[in-house]
Amino acid sequence: MSRSGCREGTKRQSQNHAVIILASGLSQRLGQPKQMLFKDGEPLIACMTRLALGNNPQAIVVVIPDNHHSIASVITELAVQYPTVQIVVNPKPETGMADSLRLGIETIAAFESISIDRVLIMGVDQVLLDEPHLTALLAGKQTVVASHYHHWQPLEKHQSLHKGASDIIGLPLAINYKLLRQWQSALIGDKGLRNLIRGLPADQVGRVGNDQLSYDIDTPEQLAYAKQQGWLDD
Image 1 (cartoon, rainbow, N blue to C red):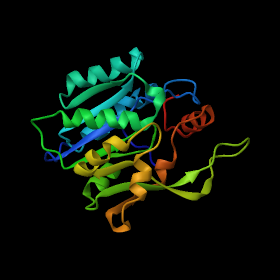
Image 2 (cartoon, rainbow, N blue to C red):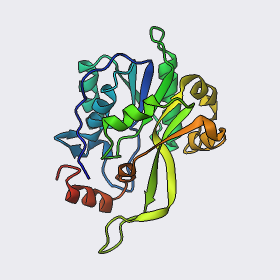
Image 3 (tube, helix red, strand yellow):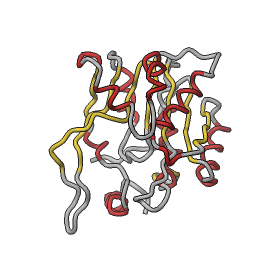
Image 4 (cartoon, rainbow, N blue to C red):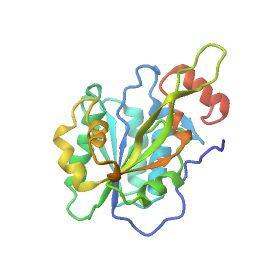
């Protein structure tokens, strides 16, 4: 399994999409901010922002938690370097991912000088996410084009991560902007987007398979495994 890099690739022609990076989680199970875990010498929040830059979006909205100065400092530095990067602070990150997404949508809606057809929604802790996968999501023609990967069971003593029976249709994903605006008021707490997507006709939902996305970082055991594999800096 290859290690994906953080650096943005060769700039492509400007596309009519925006990106929302959901980075306001409090990482309570992990015990430290996952946004500030390091990969290729820089924090994950910067790494994922650089990946998003590779597809040359109209705007990147990064939603971060309130009162986390190290996270704010990292993303502010990137925002100075790349004018397309916008920072949104979630004052109540404990309320869940849907509220962060709603804040991101509100920010995009306030842009008057750009035309948006689709929104790419990302997290920060899928450590093997790479630019080709984001490109494939944006190349899809369906209303929603989501990532498809297997569920991986938690680490157990003397075992590596192992594949479970269930599949996941989730982040990152690309979604029609008008539909996302329609759904904005229904995004509350930790529930919302996934349930709304499940209600769409099957032919409106595309999938891009990538089992490497199974590896996210929620627990100290998963963090230790990722460092052992060389996916994160030790």
